[in-house]
Amino acid sequence: MRQFDLSPLYRSTIGFDRLFNMIDQAAGLETVPSYPPYNIERTGENAYRISVAVAGFAATDLSLETKENTLTIRGSRERESENVTAKTEVLYQGIAARSFERRFQLADHVHVTGASLENGLLHVDLLRELPEAQKPRQIPIATEGANPPVVTSRAA
Image 1 (cartoon, rainbow, N blue to C red):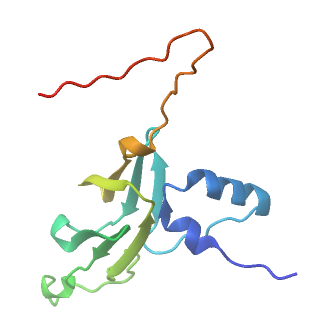
Image 2 (cartoon, helix red, strand yellow):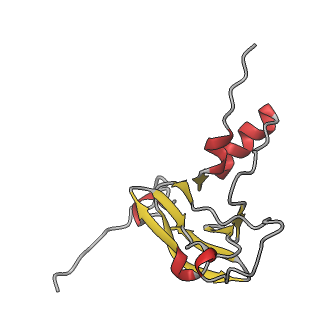
């Protein structure tokens, strides 16, 4: 039996929670973290938050862009070797200084509402707004003997 690695789909889609929860339960698949590490949180019924660990990056080093249901987060940092004097020598470099680009596929009607950078974490807030036509509505049931309601409209 062949096994397919669907983890890139799980990591990069927002708003398809029910579908991927069912697939995870059925297959028992887990995602593999990559650089930069991130969390996807559900903060409300239709609200989400992506938190990306961007230690060492300033707000000017980061850029966010949404285009055609895709959220792209880019980070590029100038080398600190220009700012460091010739007397210092790095013995161990554990904080990555490399550039990155992370893409998240957004579901229909999911929009970015804001972003903030605090304590080395970039927080991107998302909101799913369903159009009025797609929201559930109650339909009145007419019974025999009851007169159906008459809809009237007046010209303004």
